[in-house]
Image 1 (tube, protein in one colour):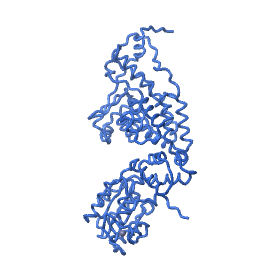
Image 2: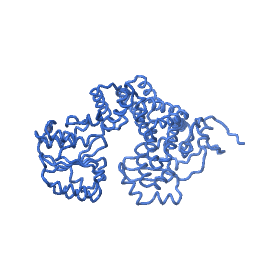
Image 3: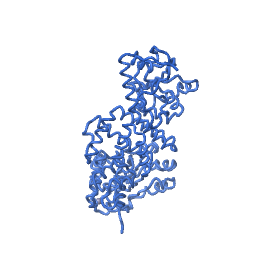
Image 4: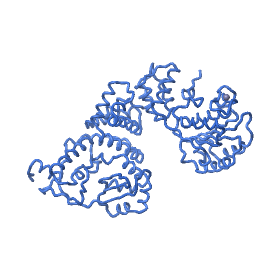
Length: 535
Ligand SMILES: [Zn+2]
């Protein structure tokens, strides 16, 4: 008995079958129709988005006896042989295993022979970025003067590893990640043809988990069909693919919403027990958060097709309870977490728990910020109160604890709430999450990765940051001599400016050290007209 895996069985055979890449299909069909096909194409895109399939279809289009045509007949010898990989004039090379200069040299020698039977000699090189440097040099020679009958189709997931000299001789097509709905629709279509019953819930969860890669989605469907007894369920999917069912994320974020530390830890543990990795957790968890954020920002329509009314209800309530500020901050925390985990893989689990527990306390801190803002607007003078109030380095934000609505202020006997206007600058309070403003956070993440010591200095001293239209503004605590050198290094400053998405120069100011004042305590005392008793 031979079983053909779904991805191969339902591989697109003609341009019309290729989904989600209309821009490429249209361009290629037109070029063929106008007889203006180039001699080298570079197909770029994430895995499983149809690059190699498209290359084969293009080969058929060019060599079909009816061709060149945008609609190859699929029945002539050429078409059939190309489909089964036995066509002598279409040479498929895996760049990963034939990456040496000898392989390419052999190719160079053969490329000048005429095709055996068909119109063109077509080279499909998959994973072309894996070729070695000398192999690229040899390939370049061929690309500089290709014989008329040769057509090169290169596929790559990582175009940055290909020398510019090669890229510049190719027409480049970028394959997109497929949309979830497209993948789910394709899977549904496969199920109908295979005459198997799979619920929409399961298909959607697969489509989501595969992040735009159709081939991954198809092989995951293959797996659940093979393992499940009867119709596959979300439980099967969880067990086989480590894809948490949607309820799990609702459980987690409901625990986060009420700062239920035990619940949070249990959810994380259960996820890892089921075989998912910390990284999977962050990716799937961020997707679930993004859904909630969309619910807040776009309303119920954002939910799309949610088959379960119960989940629909829970999502709506949860989104409302968490609110935009918190959701955005939490997303930022997850993005930062990914970077941290990459740098400290051994501590991945601890980092994960720490981050989610912090996220759980975010509500409390945001509430505190609101109370303080109210108080400040009410009676007390402008003060950097809130900035000092946060239970500084968040590492101290231990699990479970923190029942007090306001962290205990340091004891002080100074009765008058005298502000330090110089230092305060009338800034907004910045509880833990506020700095997780995604665009600034993503810049800082790049700094942490690209210039570790600079990133560390910023993290250690961070007080406040803003992305402005034409600059990045940071307010830091006063650095020591060593940190100052790092922060003011002109080369680093130039480097910062050149980061992608950076709006302009970085203005970094240092906060003047102020006398330690108990502004919160003062504000509270004023508010309640209280007198503090000293021991
Ligand atoms: Zn044909």
